[in-house]
Image (cartoon, rainbow, N blue to C red; front, top):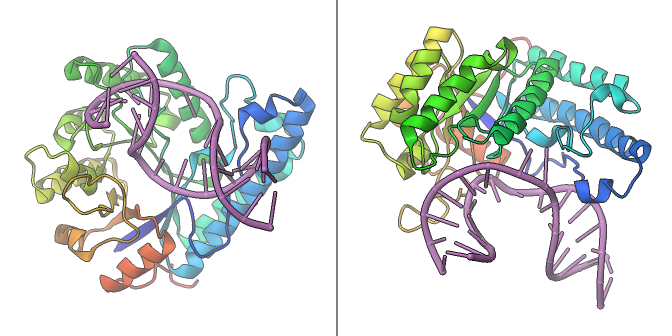
Amino acid sequence: MLRLGLCCLFNQSPIRFRSATAKVLKKLDRPGQLARLGELCLDNARSLATAVEEVHKLGIGAFRVSSPLLPLYTHPEVGYRLAELPGDEEITATLASVKTLKEKYSVRLSFHPDQFTLLSSPRAEVTAASLQELNYQTMLADLIGADVINIHGGGVYGDKPSALQRLVAQISKLPEPIRSRLTLENDDHSYTVSDLLPVCEQLSIPLVYDVHHHRCNPDGLTIAEATDACLEVWRKVGREPLLHLSSPKYGWQGKPRPHADFIALEDFPTEWLSLNATIDIEAKAKELAVLKLQQELGLPPWRKSGC
DNA sequence: GCATGTCAAGTTGTG
DNA sequence: CACAACTTGACATGC
């Protein structure tokens, strides 16, 4: 069975995630910061629970959780641990309730750290910050039951083989709770499926195949070939494959990278129709785009039997 | 109230 | 060489 996934935000549903800036927090004393952060974390944990409920009601089978769910958690100056926050027990309990909900409804949860999280940098401080971020997202993934933390290859630094070697070395050193969730994704200008597959095969780290990035940054593989090769690693580790799909906002001429509001049906690879996999839909119209595509493909609403 | 500018972090490619 | 693009909004500020 194929399931489509919503990424981070809603268009119609009034579910919102709150944020804070370090600049503003730094004006407060430490107790003031923790009070503010505690409030935001609790609100966001509740919003996430509502989001999982909503996704289930809509018949959507997966949800990508936005990385700053716990705002500024790894910030070098205002960062914190949950146990430091006023109301931490309620926050933890609410996050645990997300796990219960997602299991009840069979909704798949994942994380996609942003471009600052990368394991190929020659700079030790960049790698250290990335590891902090991966630790944070793994802690959160464990609490809510998310099974994927998906990152890009990162920079090339004028020497791709060396960068890939650093990537392999860093992944090899990761503690098991991170490693068992980590995936790599082909990006739209540096690392193709062909670049990453050897690393993925060697380390048994699955590859999240983004077909839009592949179309922007081709490597000679057809979509069918790339799909098969990626699925093979997912099969080897016994996990449900994750794929990404989007349509270009301005068409394929000129600037194809920005994402469109909806998915154009012709951008959906026919090879994917019969898969047992999750496809995250990266489209600005959010749940409207997921539901529209689901309908156009003739997919039934995602519901675990009995719910 | 509403419009506008700002926000932790990395890297690449463009203007 | 500086800065926008990645993705995208929420929040603070200023009128």
